[in-house]
Image (cartoon, rainbow, N blue to C red; front, side):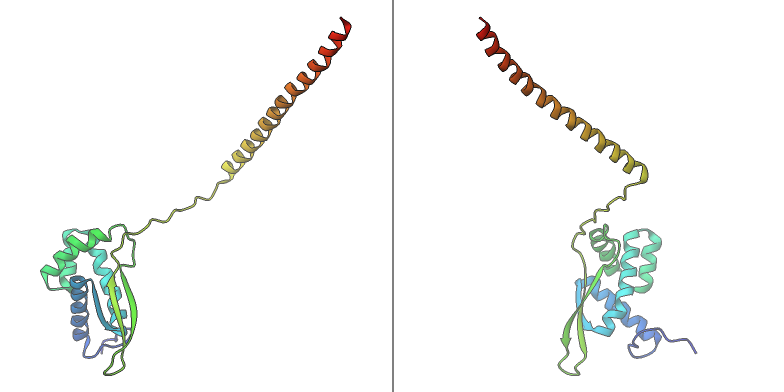
Length: 176
């Protein structure tokens, strides 16, 4: 007897489950957003993410692997030509699940699963300063402090010279 998959069982046998998830993935790529039960959305997410990753590769082997899951060539073409370029910069997390409440008939928890097609804002990575650059920074700070001290002395020196010149000028006038 084959070992059952992890997570909630979606009814029927393994082949039925595989077909059901393939059809959900095809609908997701066609409509960009679908409403289904939470259990199906959670089971669909890893499959859809894997298929988008294959589409980002874009080679023939990747296309054939996607065609092994989704039998509709039009959907696969749309995935490779329209969706993959939109998520090319994204490193993962191509889908989003939003819980929407409970279904009226059987009170099943419902969710919307959608593709995340917004452009990604790249994170700015802060480089950790190495030991050598830190020493250079300290040396640069010391130079700046020395330069400021010299500038301060230079600014004070002309003031002292002017005061001394003013003191000498009245002395010379009195001598005359």
